[in-house]
Image (cartoon, rainbow, N blue to C red; front, side, top):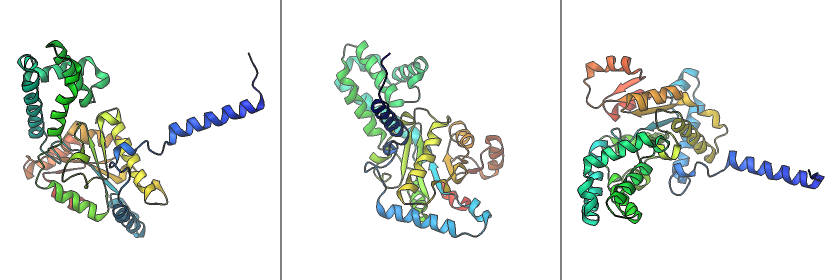
Amino acid sequence: MEQQGPRSVILSGILLAMQLCSATYAPDSLARFFPPSGKLPKPRQEKIAFYFRRLRERKTSQDRRRDFRAITFDLDDTIWKGTETLINANEKMHDWIKVNTPKCAEKYDSKNFRELMSTLRKSQPEIAHNFTALRKKALEIAFAETGYDKSKVEPAFTAFIKARNNVLLYEDSVQTLKCLRERGIIVGAITNGNANVWEICGLRDLFDFAIKAEDAGEAKPLRAPFTLALRCCRRVLEDIGETSVLSIGESNILHVGDSIQSDVDGAKNAGFYAILLDRQIREEEKANLKRDSKADCVITGLEELYSKL
């Protein structure tokens, strides 16, 4: 074996150190979860900085425990009407298919296409969390089986995702998000879906970061999306010059969602405070649902959040 000289050893050590630093501390590794600019606007940073200064000024440890530093929201059936939005998006995609690939439309109506997607989720678990990859793969298969090539996949998917981002908001969503942001709390999204908040009119300026399962590599209730949310919160604090990113931990983050399994179980297992949103439940049923779901709190509308902060 050829022996390395001192200079080669030093250069190899430097190269290895650079590679490790790049992999571990890549400055833009979280950029995809933030607005397209990569950073929050200066006025938003100043609002958050002011809120954290107020937190430090509080005198008692009890007060500190009562103040949440960040709130994350599920999106489908929490911020907007998920079922209605998805139905509309699927209809738009199938309208495109009927016009541009009629033989495919004959074989794969909405029901058959959903069954194809379901089959793929089971047969290809490595992309089960990624609804964009699943849908594109399903389209590729459907087109191939009916005599069309891969060039049809992207325009068909575009018809879907454009409508997917045309969401039907709940009446309390926008005002709630605006009030939380005005307070200075960090506001994020954690979703298993593939809607893009930065493309949604009325919402793109109301979130500080947004995490999709397809980007996290795992879906809720697994831990990765929640861990990324904490990292995003700490990235925000770094950007505003907060002296210690450890001034926000798992117990300082409140997660709100409509699913017991994905949102409540996922948040609790990650160390977050979990609020279950059920817009249909009666007031007298809240206590039982809270006990059964193990949520820290149950609400029937987002406006109830203010009383929990």
